[in-house]
Length: 198
Image 1 (cartoon, one colour):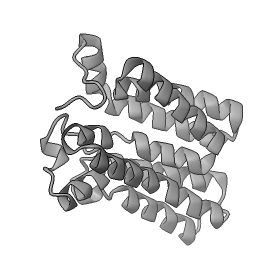
Image 2 (cartoon, helix red, strand yellow):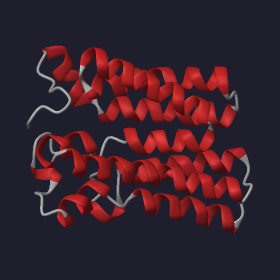
Image 3 (cartoon, one colour):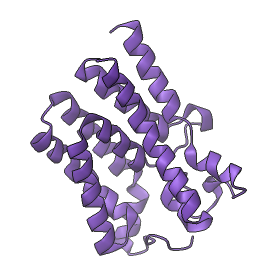
Image 4 (cartoon, helix red, strand yellow):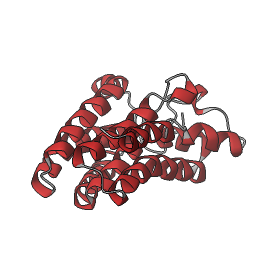
C-alpha cells in the first residue's frame, strides 16, 4: 500500500470523526445531542428535540462524510480494495470518532454516503428500502436495520465487486451491532417513532 493510499484512509477516518450532530447543535444553540432523547449524535435524535432544520443539516453532513472520501479515492483512481478501506475508515470515524472520545452515532447516513460513492444503483436501492419501511412502520431504526441487511445483496446483484460486497457485509454487521439497544426496544415494543419527541 502506498503512502497516498494510507493518507487517504487516515484522512477519511478523521473526516468521519467530525460529529455533524454535535457541531450543528452547538452552532444552533441546541443542547448536546448526547444528553437528549436517545443520546445518540445522529439526525433522528436531533429531529426529536432540535427540529427539522437541525436534523436535515446533521443528516447532510453525516452523508457527506461518507461520500467525499470515496469520491476523492475514485478521482485518484485507487484500487477497489483501497476504495473499500477508505469507505470503511469514514464509517468507523463516525461510529468511533477520535475527536469525541470514540463515542459516535450509529452510522446510517454516513454508510449511505459511502455506498453512493461506490455505486449509485446500490445506494438508490438501499434508500428506497429505508423510505418504504419508514413509510410503513414509521420507525427509523427498523428501516435502517432492514436496509442494512439487504444492502450487501443489492451490491451482489447491481455492482458485484468483491471488495465492495465484503465492505458492505462488515458495515451491515456493525450497523446491526450499533442498533442493539433499538433491537431490544423493538422487541419490547418501546422503540420511538420518527419525529416523536424524546
